[in-house]
Image 1: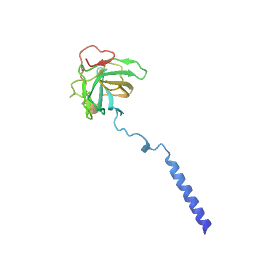
Image 2: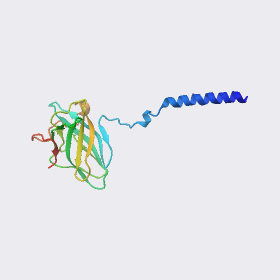
Image 3: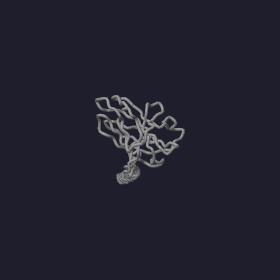
Image 4: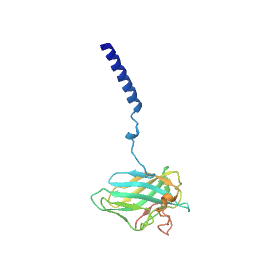
Length: 174
């Protein structure tokens, strides 16, 4: 009887190893979950759902949420945008600093905001760009951000030009 038990135990062990081996180490449970289209980056300044929304005139509006995880109040002071090949794109933007209170969500790019940032041209839907957000008292954050076509899902993202002035290589609050 003991040889039958040994064979049964060996067969069961082999079957269990094959089943577990099929799982692999690249299972979805090991992947970061990101349901939104935009990009996220966590640190002293969390950047949440960052994306550019293309406008009818060929420009694109920068949209993002920020959470200030530092011990002091911050402000968003400037935004610069480059292609993935590091070609700088002209950005128009706020003349006032966007306040980022400690531990609270602040948004950029929505119609209800006092202002925003727009890439004059060169940000094409379906591609990624590098967006650098600079703050008054925290290190700048660069994030690879998708450019999406304007659809009903992005109706709340402003299509309005934040400034009537000529675009500059990077927009800085004055």
